[in-house]
Image (cartoon, rainbow, N blue to C red; front, side):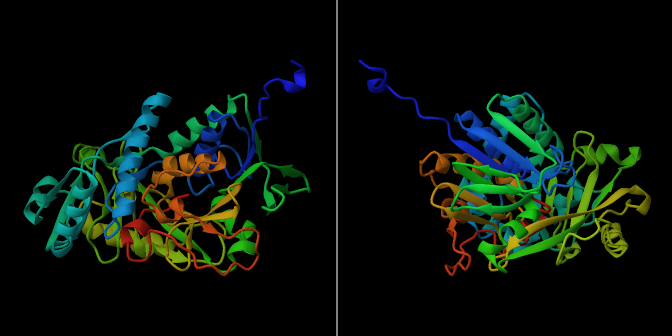
Length: 411
């Protein structure tokens, strides 16, 4: 048998990932594990403290009111994060539970939704909430839904671990401090600042807020940029025992959409509200508006009676993108099976990142992923290379799910 007649081994796929946030890093790891040669392009360091993904901690909860698909997907993400926590050998997921405080008329629907998804949950009436969380003053007439399979993801620890694993992978190249200025799905190329061009068999754009400019030819005015002000607080030692037993609270039952993340594993108490989120034209200077710090301080002084302004150690503004039509996420297929873009995160991409990374890698390998329940992930919008797409965008996590939008910033 001649050499030409013998078996041939296909060359590894060349995959370029633009953006070193949670979706970019996990997808790069999945692709590298599948045998791809992967290049990650990131405008800053890895991990990048300026990235939308970067933070101390994030909520992982299943409940998405009115959305059985996203609720089921979040429960799947819970199991995926537990597996990753074990496989990486780091304590990055603290299963402290998640408490959603709702009006009494909404609680039964929420409990049924979680039960149908297979997510254990308790219902707490007003008296039970007051006894369990005496250091909070919640609005009257509210009911709590406490999920067991939920909690807090240590975002900075996850990003650091993912970057380290990529750094030591022989099939991965990291290009840090390099900004992408143009993507061409038709040719599978990425142009970097300075003119260098990278060619790829598979291409993912997941550059957070920076994706808006890169993808402008394909999204036109469909992507909105949001700014969220967050306050980080040090709980006094006299209050520590009460806060150590706290779940994540993605909704405190207020009309302004207040939420908090407890001080888990030496992280600060993090507080914000939907009213501290606004649509903006650009990322600005990065200096938080003092008016929003004052607003949040005022709101949480009522919700946490012991709260004082001197608890605050940092005010921070973060940015994220949403689809203008739905207020949710948007995954674009820019070229048939070979080029995708996470054009908008919708506020929940961090917790769903393992599912997104797995599904994208399967698509890159020519396999149709099993349905996840996330509409935009299961059926990406096919924009192709058409600079004027007219097909209606299909996304999940729309304006009706205030909880989805409260869990920001997310990459």
